[in-house]
Image 1 (cartoon, rainbow, N blue to C red):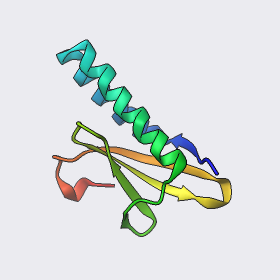
Image 2: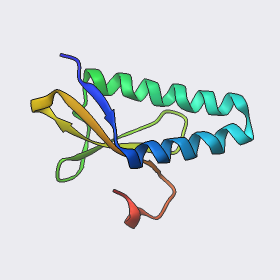
Image 3: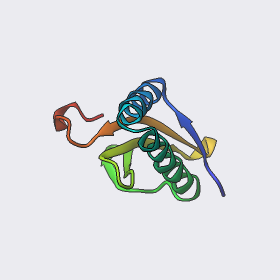
Image 4: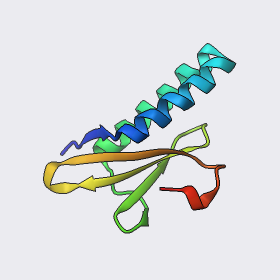
Length: 96
């Protein structure tokens, strides 16, 4: 059973900010960031049951980038709702 991945508005803004930052350093870096993000989405569609960080909030790290996706699994709707794309070197107290 494949899950649908839905992106929260806050997470979308964080993704766009990260993409813009990488794209400024190199056009290829921005595209590679998006490829890493799409790869994580693909994994979540198949198996979203990753480590629970807090209550029902789970996370998965992006490959080769210091970001983690924080998400919730909504089994009744067969959906994964991405809450945040959090830079791992930020203050941990601001983690979602």
